[in-house]
Image 1 (cartoon, rainbow, N blue to C red):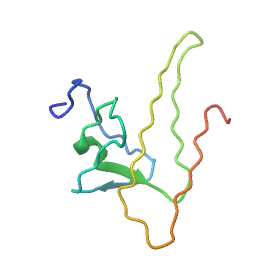
Image 2 (cartoon, rainbow, N blue to C red; image 1 turned 120 degrees about the horizontal axis):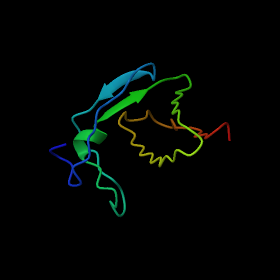
Image 3 (cartoon, helix red, strand yellow; image 1 turned 180 degrees about the vertical axis):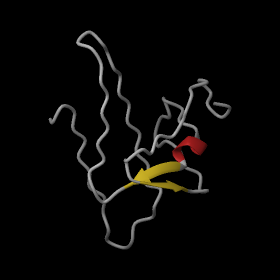
Image 4 (tube, helix red, strand yellow; image 1 turned 30 degrees about the horizontal axis):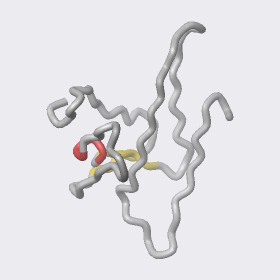
Length: 91
């Protein structure tokens, strides 16, 4: 990816996850940006009022590393808050 200093590939996958959303505002990591998320990648999002369920399948010996980055790209209304639960294997 041309804007990624680690040359990672970013391809959005919105299949059944919700409604795609893009912003032109700069989105950056807070604190120490150790993962170097490109703003242009963080400017794309998906939102849903329902559960967003992502499944990975693999064999018993397969190993996955999961890294989640959250950005609020829709400005909340006054006194509005965000709430989410992130579960792995139902926990």
